[in-house]
Image 1 (tube, rainbow, N blue to C red):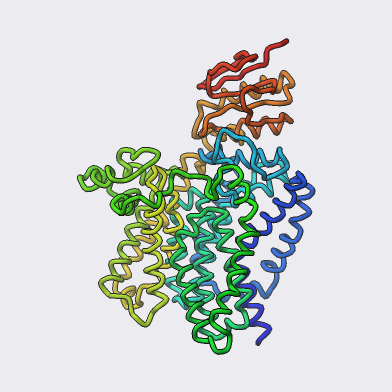
Image 2: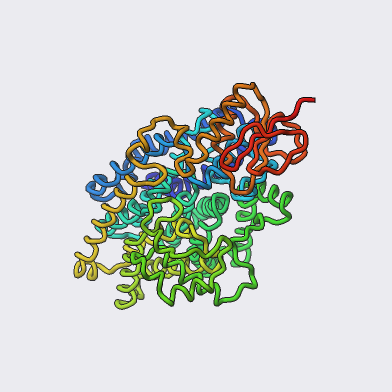
Length: 594
């Protein structure tokens, strides 16, 4: 029995912290290889052998299937999840990365890392290629280095989508939720429109959601270990894994830690209470001080190299991002920001014409412009803008039930869930400024909100069953519709064209022929090096990656330059060069003959 309990403990902690351990491992390996400029296919493949072995031991053994069966629910939910996941995988492989941010920095940095054989910072006009946290791109880089193709790039978020569903089930089992609630929570998480569109892209918000849920899972697993008396034997393994998850989440996207901040504070409270209760045996101050090196060492291993590069490059540890409120920002703007965030999920577009909305909109601080009627984007099938309207209304409905029924005081788990999720919405909008694509950044909130279903008393569910069935049916119908009508990657191949490279430009078709002409000119004239002089939001990746595939070396260059060819999105004269091709605001400069 003890052996079986140990196996169950280690498999549970491995599953909860699996993404974090993977990010930690890949970060260490890539930083090590980068020191020797050896991020190459053979070395990267060699260091993936332990990952494959762990996958075999964890997922492909009979004991693992017992764990999965223990945490599973009635098989009916698979009738929705499995076909949906297979469809997501199909779309992810069918299309190349083609969303805006991936073309400017997510995938562009991967291409430059591969060429440089290092994840070190490099000169770039697109500052985000260096400044943004690189954890998600580390995972994308691995298959791209090994296979020299981006065919697997979208799958990173596809599996993050599946992990979000699985971790919701695991948390449900840890807190002893009823099976019928597990089914509803699963469908809620699986059918989020923004999550579905993210699942076939190379952005990082779905990964951030997975890490946010992982941190919440860590909290409840820690609490379970304390309550059952098993914590003294397992504390160091659990705390080390928990620390790694916190810093790995930050390396992927800091907002994932922000959304889970209430649960991190709650975990700290439970730890302090445990050590205080056992102070005569363990020593209160000494026990707390022992936690410090665990936390510091985990942070240095996971974040140290990237923070060091950031500080050298920018003189700060954050990259000086303008989207974050300064400490001196007033409360009025922060509260207005918190309220305006709801309008990005309003099912009624006319609400954004109300005086109340217009007043809020005038108060918020949006570095990218406040925009017009944000409600018009709620049902737009775009991975940057779509809202989660049905889910948002359902969340509001659940909170109303909890308020009118009052949370049962004995159910501290339910109270923590409800307060933690509500707190996450407030703290996020207190820290992050309004942006036209804020609904994308809010995605971890919606995935963690699937856990709200577990807070509902059974009496309420039985009495208002129809009020749950209706939104669930609507969620399923909406999810298939969104997947089919994805503006960037529709289920039916766009324009009947099966050429993957053609679909890089689904969001900017005007660049398709321009880039193709540039690439053809460079290939025809056997040009081996190309310099880029671009603005901060230019589409770097589809041009850079296709040139690299042809054996051309591509780098962002400072003026004056030495490359034979320079591609720029500005007609500013470059001494010693003449324009030989142009289109849609892009210019190809050729060095003049001496």
